[in-house]
Amino acid sequence: MNYFRKYYYGDYGDKEAPTGGDTGKAAANEWPLWEVFIRSKQGLDHKHVGSLHAADAQMAVENARDVYTRRMEGVSIWVVESKYIHASNPDEAESFYEPAEDKVYRHPTFYDLPDEVNHM
Amino acid sequence: MPVQNFESHFQEKIDADVRIEPKDWMPEKYRQTLIRQISQHAHSEIVGMLPEGNWISRAPSLKRKQILIAKVQDEAGHGLYLYSAAETLGISRDEMIGQLHSGKAKYSSIFNYPTLTWADMGAIGWLVDGAAIMNQVPLCRTSYGPYSRAMIRVCKEESFHQRQGFESLLVLSRGTPEQRAMVQDAIDRWWWPSLMMFGPHDSESLHSEQSMKWKIKRFSNDELRQRFVDMIAEQVKLLGMTLPDPDLKWNEERSHYDFGKINWEEFWNVVSGNGPCNKQRLDARKKAWDDGAWVREAAKAHAEKRAARNKQQAA
Image (spheres, helix red, strand yellow):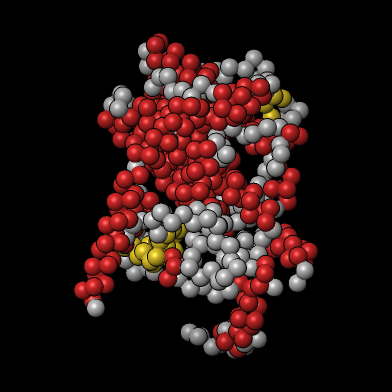
């Protein structure tokens, strides 16, 4: 089963590749890959928008400004080197998220209340 | 699970419009097709900066110069979104750029035509970007997640490209007889190459069928080309200009415009390297890459040195 799994970089950590994983021919000379997160306005979360290459964090932030906020899409930028991101494994998604599946009582719509009850 | 099951499970996801993400299992052929298509697309954005860059220093006003610079910057950005999307499939940036420079990877053949007059800037925005948008909008729903997200970003920005092009031609078309002639000449030169941008006829298109099944493509080359013709044939009237096709005629029965035969010999000639500017474009890209080598190396060395110094101080 593991044989078929492929680990690629970008969108999530590039150093997660276990032995046997095929990461392509990442050139040793390339600047490292960074994931970019942008807060579009005060009060909202930072959201992943994509990735880019940069020699260091400062350059990554500046490049992110030029690549991802040319039209005022952001008021704050986070960058993190892709290799530091750890991700859940899609092959295990079924069992991994299974515990939440049978717990309908966690949703407000599970409860039938008389129409007369207001403000709830 | 045997491979067939992986494949059928994969196809089920595609059929149910579930997006494929980088870590998901995918057929090797799907991965290769995407790498080819996305990197080709990225290269087109990057090479596409050259014909327009040609006119930045000669734009007729500060306003037009600012607009043109912004457009060329967008194209750099689009190239970068797309390179990143392709990298999620396991190919490195350097490898892709190497493929462009060696000629293994192609880019849109439209950029192998020269930009002879200022009106070409308008014609490129209106026709070339118009054709690109026609191709790109359906790609916002393509089955591979990172590609689809990159395309949503691209499409949002691309509509300014087309509008500024048309507006620029509109201004010229209301100008002097010389300006009007310049507009017509630009349209005459860019019309047929724009139609070629949709690729070969469906019957001759190498990768189309499988790409449709995998929902990488959502519409066929000929379908999109027809939509483009229908759109432009109407818009050209507003410019008071004509398209260089004597066979262009509204067909009541089909509710579409009929149009003349495309010169596919020219298309394949340009694709295979014999267009007017193929060599010039590739040389410019290679030169930029080679001239930038010391910057890439210096920045990397600087970052490494600083990281080492910080580490030492922390110790």
